[in-house]
Length: 227
Ligand code: ADE
Image (cartoon, rainbow, N blue to C red):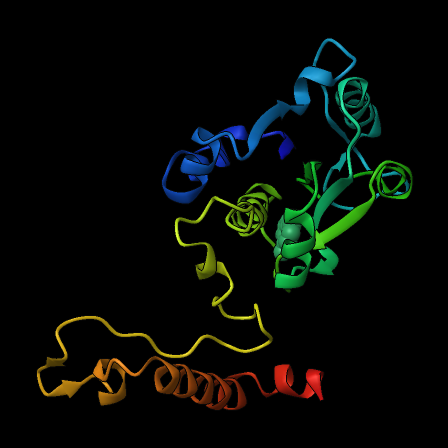
């Protein structure tokens, strides 16, 4: 998989790719991540990437030309499955969307800034708009890191234990059950006995029961969605 990220502030974005799972995935060549500095695609001498909004109002708007130039340049070499714009008014990211995106070959992610991009970028250049939640960040870079992490860990072979992504919260429509490790008794706080029983079918039953209980208590909407 190849992910091309278009950004004004690559420094905001790079370090999450330099540690842990994402670093390992890149080193194992499961994914290639490239950063493209939007300013390099600006047309005038000042390398201007934003301008005042037509009609007036506060804040600056990201210009269409540098974005179009950058996307065109990338598309000269590769066909992209999705060109994603990260924006708080996009479709809210879910595990299902990450699962789908993890099966794609090439994607572009455009990080917004200021008041956002000229609407014509959204109307003509972008194939999908994603939000990571109902709150506003200063720009799309942190959202891009979140989106990439959620996708990259799902690429086959990236997680050591292949089954471990399957038992994540949301993967089966339920929150993950509680987990424990040694010591079995810490300050009198005990691990449920069943987990040390060695009885795998019973452990699985217990985990499913706990996952359902937890989901009903914390996210009843997830259960309702399945009914
Ligand atoms: N850019 C700013 N806020 C965002 C959000 N919540 N999700 C995605 N991109 C964003």
